[in-house]
Image 1 (spheres, rainbow, N blue to C red):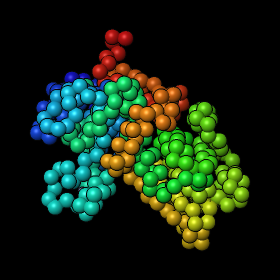
Image 2: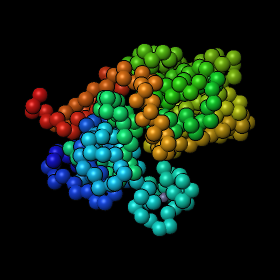
Image 3: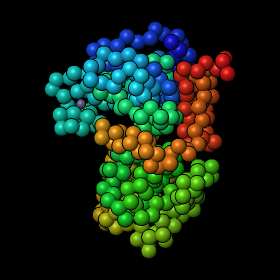
Length: 348
Ligand SMILES: [Zn+2]
Ligand SMILES: [Zn+2]
């Protein structure tokens, strides 16, 4: 089968490898679509802490079960989205770490991912633990199914925020995670959701989903206070992970408001912790998603509750994987760039 591996800084390699053999408790997934995300771009640039050259990339993937050695798991032919987390408990570590033992395997002390620590989805087939696959209704498109992973990140962020309905919300960053976070917050009853984004194309997409948007070039904390009777937002999500944003979060949140860090910073940013003191801000971290968050994301996609079937996406054949990564890096023209690993550019 054809696979795409990371070959070093700014280098991908297309290789032929044998189809993986599955062990007891695993399923073989025939991959239909793989989404490319910021952490894949970080791996490509050599900025990821754990990835090693030779790894088959891709952690946002969907497909169908081609073979199963997991009785009781989804039958052969089922469409599935893969929750790509590998916790110490999954590796059979005894005793498991404290996070795993307390039912929080998504923050396992030695959390790994398919596509970073184990072979990922940029392959015709991938072997995964049966516990990692979530069945998705057959009539949901493969493009939508592959959005389950990034959507689960947004579901988790909103769950962690404590949002109950009626809140004013500001989301810094209008990429896929920021847009999905805004959509989930609105779906859960937020009264007002504004998105801050520097890229005009992405602002246009956010507007097409009905959100008011702010260009990050303006004084965004002032604009957010203006929308909220001078108070600031009840909940501020940081889906940007940009040092310039870190300084604004505490200005954009109201007194006793909540700040949720979703985007991953490449290096520790400067944050105004003095304002966190005086305003009694609640500062909340988030990492990936729980099993329940992922199941919620699948349900949202199956019902198209967030109208994500209208999301601008673009699918590249696997032979053009390098072009796909370049397109994802530009962040324009499609909110999500996907690769179809079954396609061979030659037959188009
Ligand atoms: Zn990702
Ligand atoms: Zn663990």
